Length: 245
Image (cartoon, rainbow, N blue to C red):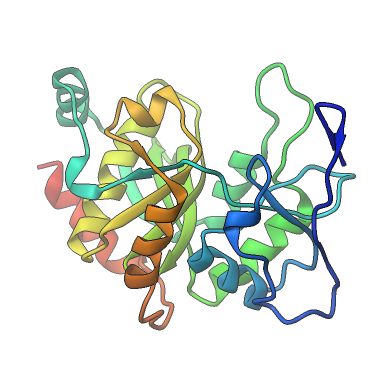
């Protein structure tokens, strides 16, 4: 690989290497840590507690990233502007979780405006569907008149929710859904939401950045114990109905 006319070597992960055989994130170059491996549940669940996640576009090989700094949200720092609070009070959206993970990840994978590509390939969809079946990947949904209008999905490990992607089809739906999602995570004693990379949208909701070293120290504590995966559908519906009343 060449960056700024300098050839750099990124470690290659053989398909048959142990699931946790990643270089230390300190060795990442511009966030890129390793190439190759597979998208097995074991490898993905080994990557996240180390501050590593897959992100690539076909026909590229699987790329593993650990950016520095890392964008995070401490749930207690969620910022709700007066306008957003009013929109939440006036909203008729129905909020659910884990009711249609496939539709949510497909919505996130849909080509963005002015872009013909997406990093959420069929292989990635199948990998995260497997994690959802295992109870480790979760989705949150916003509905209007029976139509899915916004979605968020990510991975839950210990007391950390690793947000992967979100989409919205109507104004304000993603922000309303995000607030509901954070409040639900607070109710389950989650202490950190990983947002991966910075955006103005996330910053407006209270997200900030941490140096990677500090982020990894938090993961060392908050990702243990891993716990057992399960569906969040039943109690999330009750909770979101109550916080909008």
